Image (cartoon, rainbow, N blue to C red; front, top):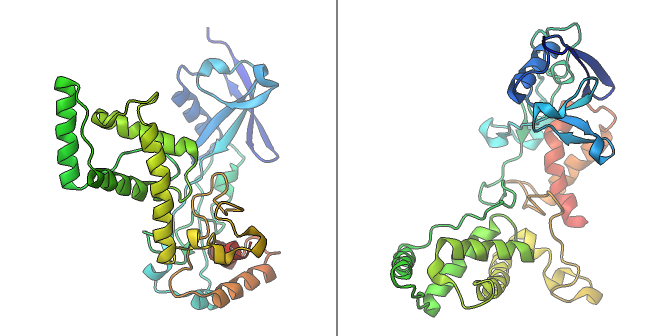
Length: 333
């Protein structure tokens, strides 16, 4: 006979519930996930965490149903998703949104229990998950949408470079001979790598440069060098190439690197490597350019409106404007 389990479930802030498993613990984590969804009527995806006694009862992600014992406390961590609609797709401007803020409506599924999950109960609120959410338009080429990957993907090089590298790999596998790298070939490789790195960050750290150089040697072993790691020279070259690439982007006015130009620093900070403004941890876009058709003055008006309406946290206008007003604030900090 299966053991009857009783669990304490933290469904949300100040929402603690009891879960009785009369048939015992499900055999897989997916089945346990479905059991919780059916018991509490939760329609949003979530992770399950448990209080780990090995780490002072801190919450840790559940990786196996064997982590959960009778009378354990588990916590649901909801996975937030975003559905964003560019402003120009709906034919609105910031001023028109100020005058005609659309209303939202939502419906939540009927829960199994007599209580409603925190996600279902807030389905009608104007959040970033709503289909009516509007953001000011940016060029897709100017905004980053990816964090630094675990394994850096080596991009496709120009056709003539790819041919040389493939032939170099073939020769390396057959005879163990390294490819003779000409200055032009090396420049083309570094230029493409710098371009790809810039898609993630303008100021890569040492470990990120190390990741790129290691991935390059792993894909093209014919480029390996006679050093301890086999790619130390590539690391140094990549650092210089990134500095040159930032100079190129600064020349065309890219704001993330322009903000660190010497002319924008104080007189006592006029050193290239001093007080460099970089993205914070987990920040993808740092100091992005203004949305299309916007200026410092128009964004300041949006920010002022937000400050006037900040007491009404459910105000639809705040949800649509909060993402745009920060662009000018980022430049002042």
